[in-house]
Image (cartoon, rainbow, N blue to C red):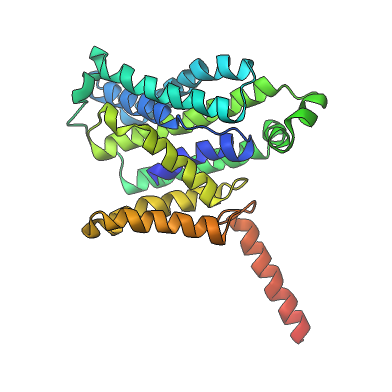
Length: 279
């Protein structure tokens, strides 16, 4: 569920705005270190630390978002820029005193319990859903479908994309805060491009244009390696096999452009039609 919180943010930016990012591990790292420093060094309560971590991650998104989106970088160029930003953030965390360098921060209190994380995930999905159905969410979807037509219709591409990136980073920062206080230890090499790639894979496998799809995919992909931990390296083979199977059998993703509630209503409607036909 901690992974799903970060994936929900990336789903907004990649799935609904159409911008691919491979640097979201940087925002998770910012959130994790901010919360860890707040609780361990300054003795702040956990919830305010999570909120501060989310805000700091959002501010970090402006560092990469403003120059790249104002320059109208798209497709591979923007992806490479986020990739470089993620690596630069990791190196920065290794070389500043407050983060304790490559040794990381240990002995954190385990605040991330199952009820707390579950409530946080529900709140994040609820906020993401409200954004999607808001005016800005509709503009983001229009940009994803055809950014040229959206710009000709009067939509400011820079503002909408930057807002989507900021919200995505806020959710990722919150996920990082929960991650730090679940593992109770963080260091820079935990937040590499591999983690960013796993987030992107969950969004694509879950279904671009869906919120609940990436959430379920994130939980699935985080669970498989842990369930098969006894199989050692073979668990990674199974992980890759599941991802390949989804891409081959369901190229549109597990949910495609639908949500879980849509499928539930569809099944309910089909069962009603069957009862009427039998009657």
